[in-house]
Image 1 (cartoon, rainbow, N blue to C red):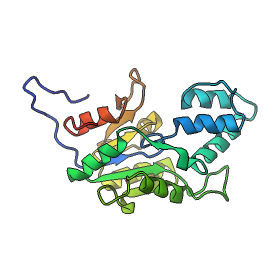
Image 2 (image 1 turned 120 degrees about the vertical axis):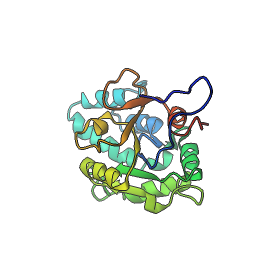
Image 3 (image 1 turned 90 degrees about the vertical axis):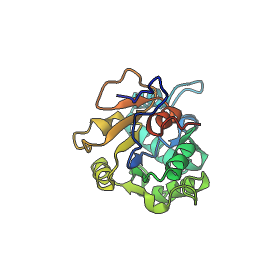
Image 4 (image 1 turned 120 degrees about the horizontal axis):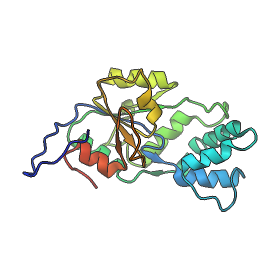
Length: 219
């Protein structure tokens, strides 16, 4: 359950010992890029408006839709990554964690090359460049050694445990529903899913995450 602020104003929740963060669609906001790429690749009608979930459903309903969705992901996470923006409040949150001395790591399920584009963009290098360009990897931010790319979800879950994370933020409930997710780690699902039920707390944005984890520190 979410920590509550008592009437006296005293904060009852201790600071987290170690925070883990997902990258794609959590720190990096691809919403506009997915739509732009889908239109350019003629995978949706010109006037289509919707979030990533509705876009995925739209494309998967096409003939050979699963392959087309995979190709779109390869395009967005690779060649178009530089067009993506940082999720509002994410950088402020990371800097606040660093300023408070809380060990903070990014743990991403990301292969080096997309399955749909095996000889294309190095996804690890592209992601590190994006993180540097947007200030996440910096003197007052994270180091490259605090960013981990894992080839499978299983490896990601193992890494979360090895790092000693006490809280983890992700946009995919499948990660938190996985029976191999470290049981002692607090699960914070980022996204507009207020009625989702599972072994996690749902927080709509980075301001809410900051309020939950950092005693109300928010942008």
